[in-house]
Length: 93
Image (cartoon, rainbow, N blue to C red; front, side, top):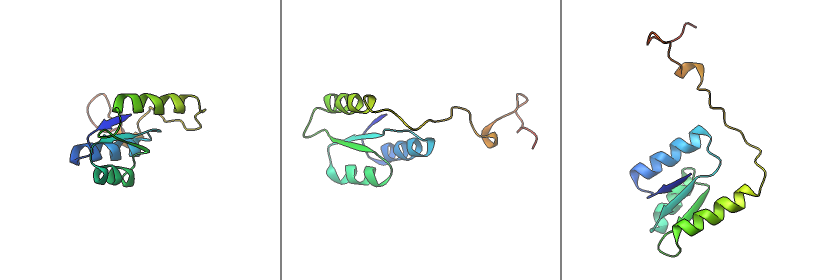
């Protein structure tokens, strides 16, 4: 996934993606300091939009990643602690 802007909201999205198990998290910004912070918080790749075309850079990163077999899978089923019974109450233990 790509996150445009590594400010407060963008960094929160990056952290959420990392926690959710995203394999590739690309942070895009024009400030190197923000990109460095994005790397610290979970971005796997960064793109400095002041130096390169971000769309082209993201496409190149995705193309390179798609040629590499993935060894990581992410479960789409939420943990039982997040499931909600159809009645709106938490499921029984």
